Length: 156
Image (cartoon, rainbow, N blue to C red; front, side, top):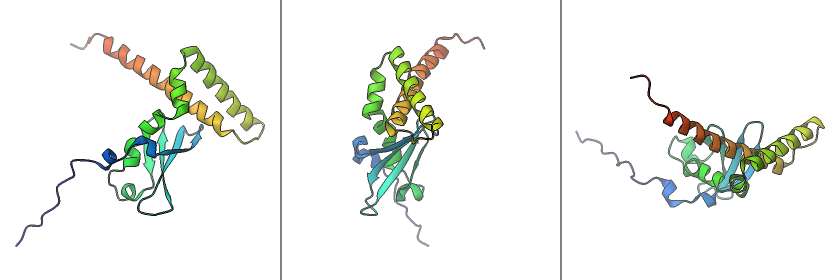
């Protein structure tokens, strides 16, 4: 009986052959805290793969063939880097704390006002709100981790 040989697992993932700038921003949903980005599909010419990123948890979801088959997906691997490189996200990172709070408050107010008046929420307001939320979380999560690391270990 001949033993069946399986191909060794590839040492390089497909994300090494791609860059975050291959993902294009599509839209943002401020109620779900999700941004969508797309990339042209290689397996379905003329179609696009859409990857969703939850900016608060970092969870990703993609509709590409690799993801559907449970294989590693370069879209999911690079979506956080693509979101962090988006111009709105870069601008939010350059704000001072007071500017970030003002920008986030204004965007939240504009989204709430449009919904209250039964208007369609402007996509840029949603984008700016999510960029401000992501930056606020990044700053304060770092502070929290630093504060926990600085605490002495009293369990011993």
